[in-house]
Image (cartoon, rainbow, N blue to C red):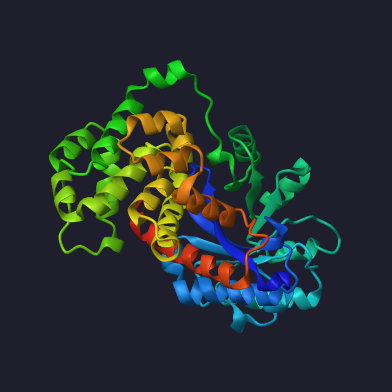
Length: 402
């Protein structure tokens, strides 16, 4: 099978210096090369990813009002009619293999005149690439390689925005900020924080959050008790009200207090929104994980319902809690001891065993593009589930950064 016929789509968040999620990059990665982005036929891969993301799912469903970066092969620069019809939100990434010859510069200027921003991906300054600085809005630099301060200063003097790629930890994030970078991409926000058992036990806030989760997932939820518990977390109340009052919920009347929200949302939606916000606890790093957590939960649910004949609600819970160790600073075993979870759910989280564990493993394998032996049909189906789940997650999180 050609690699171009079997690839996974994904979206990787891009944040600003305040760790607010402002954009995403659309990735399409060969399943036979794991997380590598090398694909035999770049035109075909781009066309299929664009069709699935922009035309079948829709940009607003994938990214809300944020921007979407996507890799455009050289040939696409000469055919602007192939570009997604969202010039105000789409950032066209010029691949590192593209040189700044007059023909390319002319084509990019035309693309810019249509309203698109231009990013130079994995840019390396040379005599061949220097002309591209004339047309660049954003330069993406791989932080795993060395960059000369004078070169970075040159970009900044030209008014070009800098995006740091592969930022692996918070120390590197802060270093990049100090250098003048204003956009960031990498896994610095998804690193587990090292906390001792004593720290966990002393954290009253963690206990309060687990108490909210525990009540939300009782068979017979006491909404009045949930309301009382949530009211003890002012930041949680503020986030929840802002999200519900956002335009995406399209409510006729403004919701001004928590009781209205609890009454109007219904238990399922309330459970999902409050759970994700409780897990994030208004921590900027953890807030950046929410789209991934909810997308994973919805994808687990869809697979359970349509492919595995497992309990969809339990599968959703497994996906939702699958990063709770990072977000709550506790082991899965500790979390399972404190929440009213089924035995199957606990086995899936702790050991990745059972039908629910298999579903979670499949979703994580898909996220990493490690489906080496999967058929073209299976990968296409998983891509579809992923995009549908991402769309649902972004609608749930609408207004998060309001």
